[in-house]
Length: 530
View 1 (cartoon, rainbow, N blue to C red):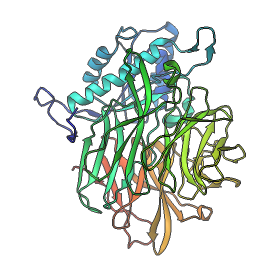
View 2: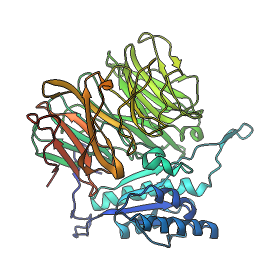
View 3: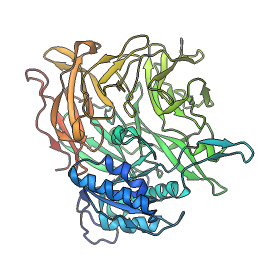
View 4: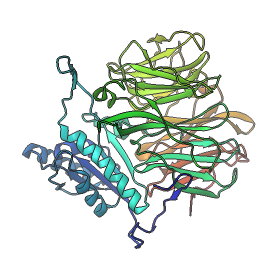
């Protein structure tokens, strides 16, 4: 890694560590790394047309698994996904997989890597042995953990970004790529700093990548820069506080003094646009006293309240929600367990009318649960009568106080919901994943909220409604670009809406609003760094 205060820029055609010019990564190539061929079909089903997929398996598996893989490969060919009829078998064992995976990734040079959950969920708890019972074979988790490590090493030695997705084993393929993610992509990854400059933050295998406007509202950007930090698990949460500072939150696996691994929540602050990121600090784990339980912690959601206190929320080992708060002077209170309905590994934290609150998709039903407080210091109250029925992988905060966006589980339509009211449909049943939005955009004299989301096959779909009036309806249109991650939107230093995507070649592309246009219109897409 770079030294403190240094940044490493990634770009195609960079020099390797040996100084030799090497071949660039293949932007249309995806590596799927799994324990056996039987784990690959669900991941292959989520691939989009036009990609080339290399499948790596630690073991050859059974005859039935190989037959299932061949059927999945044939189905891929029928919809324009190129995949070998035979997977590459590494003949590797638990704990001895990193180097064979790294060698294979060097040959494939993928932009994206897909694997399974490095910390599979327990199905029960052995009270006598005092250990969780994991039904999945140990090789699955071992392959995923070593794949994350191998992808990190590949990115560090080549300088090319590598993006990793970890999927829950057994997730319904009909949910798409977003529905079964263990570590979600950030919904709001484009921010405006105190100086008016936009910055984009995305997680990569080797750490957080950052792109920053060199001047507010200008088309000159710096990046991508690989920010110094610990070896993070895939995924990232990006939030801003009341002063405009950006906070990055994620999960880190580290070894303790006894050599055992522990997964903890970590947090860093960006005080000035383009300047070095502040140090990463541990925010702990609600199950920190038991490492076997701690590794299953859900991905953190976060929000700042009106007093500029940071609230963290995670799904804990018992499928409840745990929270802790950091006050403006940097002091943390203890983890608190919010009792009630079992939660899935999907939370949305937001600022409600009386302070921070959190919504969670229920684990055992197509419903959402909300925890809130009557005053900022009151006890937490659970509200199960929310009328929200979110599709997996779609919860996100809306600009309106206490409101969330999600896709309705029955139709996949985008909806916005508030406590005590029925969800309002915003249309857009195509695509998958969360919806991002930016309020306060001037459209012909009207204050509007601009929305962006994934459309069909990863296209960027854009819409808008009057601020605070989603019931007026949304007209969606295709912005003409596809994105590897959920699209983002922000208002730049000149008051224009800016939409951002991670293009299929792994580069950041943006389009700015044309303020004098009739209605909502955007100029040509610009590739950052071109």
